[in-house]
Amino acid sequence: MSALVFLEGADELSLQALTLGESLGDVRAVRFDGPYAPAAWAKAIVDAAGDADIIGPGSDRGNEVLAHVAAQLDLPFAANVTEVRGNDVTRIRWGGTLQEEARIHSERKLLTAAPFAFAPSSSPLQAEVLSPSLDGSVTVVDQVAPDSGGKVSLADAKVVVSGGRGVGSSEGFAILEELAELLDGAVGCSRVVTSAGWRPHADQVGQTGTKVSPDLYIACGISGATQHIAGCKGAKKLLAINADREATIFAHADYAVVGDLHEILPAITAELRKARAV
Ligand SMILES: Cc1cc2nc3c(=O)[nH]c(=O)nc-3n(C[C@H](O)[C@H](O)[C@H](O)COP(=O)(O)OP(=O)(O)OC[C@H]3O[C@@H](n4cnc5c(N)ncnc54)[C@H](O)[C@@H]3O)c2cc1C
Image (cartoon, rainbow, N blue to C red):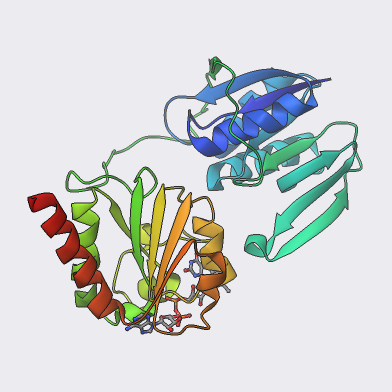
């Protein structure tokens, strides 16, 4: 058996997909340069794969490209798989609230690896770059780089200071910004915050936002809804600050502080500044 693994790059989700591919047999890894064109990328993957199984990362792009692959091959596709046993798979649905046992009615497997269900592969990464035929279906008219203001991005940050409804307003995020800057981290938020217009959607962490995997995730005034946890469960450590000692977020936390974030965050920042001044 062999598997063709589609990688977005050397990111963590792609390396996790590689691990899933390696568990199925001999692996050939491919990736793309150039503009994102899911249907064209899928066609190039289908042409390159022959009869091999096709595996991708459980990212937005991974799932979209594999969905195109499945449509082009008219084969079933299982997204966000956590385990494979022959033709049976376990996959997560609804942002991790549901685990589903499914049977694939095909000899060939088209799968994406659920984020953080597999350890990243440590094999030397040698991905072949495929050249999709764009056939005029994708034309690059302009390229606009995200304006990060020189700060580390949410996806790459080693520390994420994230705020929820408890922050209270867009101005309330100033104390999160201050702490994030001190820790060389990035600011994230919950969907309530983006829905209220306090922060842009690019800052949202969760099922319908960015999936982060920092060393430390500081959740401030966030209740811990499953859709939010889906985006931060890859964090190595989670510090939760919440006024409600019954908040669900504490069940996911390595460190818990019960109290008002408007008092606790400035106190942490002041201690950090003091310690660094010594
Ligand atoms: C299909 C779908 C997709 C979704 N995708 C996402 C997603 O990607 N990301 C996401 O975040 N959500 C998502 N949601 C929404 C999610 O279900 C929750 O509604 C949301 O995460 C709640 O945000 P929150 O924790 O900020 O607000 P709340 O649930 O209202 O929690 C606020 C918390 O702040 C605490 N608090 C209040 N004041 C203070 C204070 N002064 N100090 C300390 N703590 C305080 C409260 O005790 C409470 O725990 C999705 C929902 C659906 C249905």
